[in-house]
Length: 113
Length: 113
Image 1 (cartoon, chains in turn orange, yellow):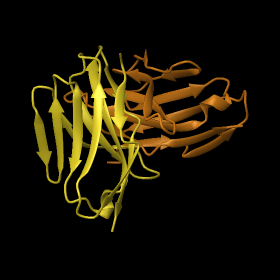
Image 2 (tube, each protein chain N blue to C red; image 1 turned 120 degrees about the horizontal axis):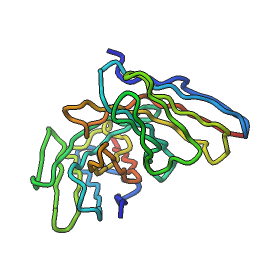
Image 3 (cartoon, rainbow over the protein chains, first blue to last red; image 1 turned 90 degrees about the vertical axis):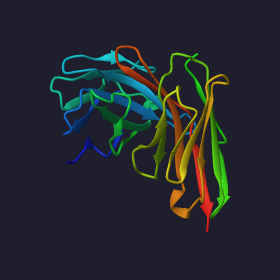
Image 4 (cartoon, rainbow over the protein chains, first blue to last red; image 1 turned 135 degrees about the horizontal axis):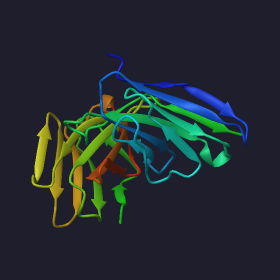
């Protein structure tokens, strides 16, 4: 089991560019989440999904879009990157039986210049 | 209020000592209180968790104490070891049709050998 994997590990963008972060899990989990982690602020929920084809907004959704076309994948898109989106992004998943127990990926470090 | 307030921001403890990290919350809808441990360059990993109907939970050297009336909970690490040096996040989860988790800002623990 690879658990939760994230692609890419690092990325540098220029302001206005777009990109997609990919999260994949092989644990057959129903729930998936995208967080951003900034110094001194813990992790903040961007968007989440309670199942294939469903998505919902978290605490800080502005500037991001998500899609969950397949159960095992959860994509996070930045349509027009801004320096304020410089952060470390973590994906997580949790199973139907214990949905409040989350398993995190290794993170993607994104810098927007 | 959605916030979870965590203190201290950083903590230095001698090897063999007790590390104590405190958290407070406002929203009485929270029904699950996990602690996550994060090493540099890695994603957070669930360490221990408690539900509000229990006042204490112990797993090895790690203990959560929970005070429902005060809306506070804390993590105690007994016999702290250099390998415990990491960032610790408290969190609180509630069900809104998806399980939203609000994280504290984190405590950076350093255990001196």
